[in-house]
Image 1 (cartoon, rainbow, N blue to C red):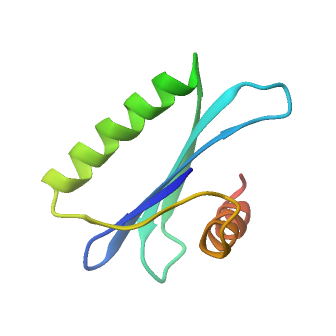
Image 2: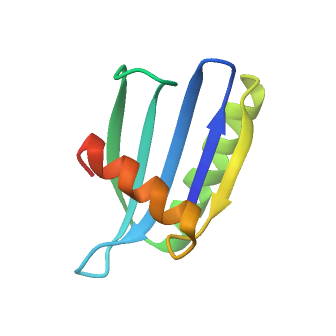
Image 3: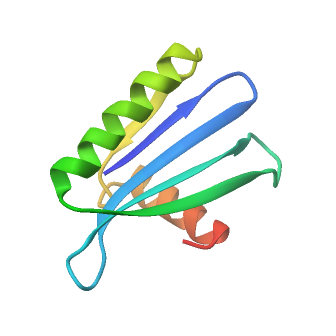
Length: 92
């Protein structure tokens, strides 16, 4: 699952996925749109449900900061593949 929020100048992108060992990884990237400024953080979730709980937390925080959700998709969609490709440039 991939979700992206944007404000006028900034973005936050969350990628929830399983690694090759079956562990659930919660990856969060953030930065300024159109620049190299930002960061990337990975967290190992105890379960898919925990990763979804973290996603709900991020959604609440970003909404309260005035960000709007601009993408919610799976990795299998064209938009999802593009988002994963962008994350790989950040070191995912």
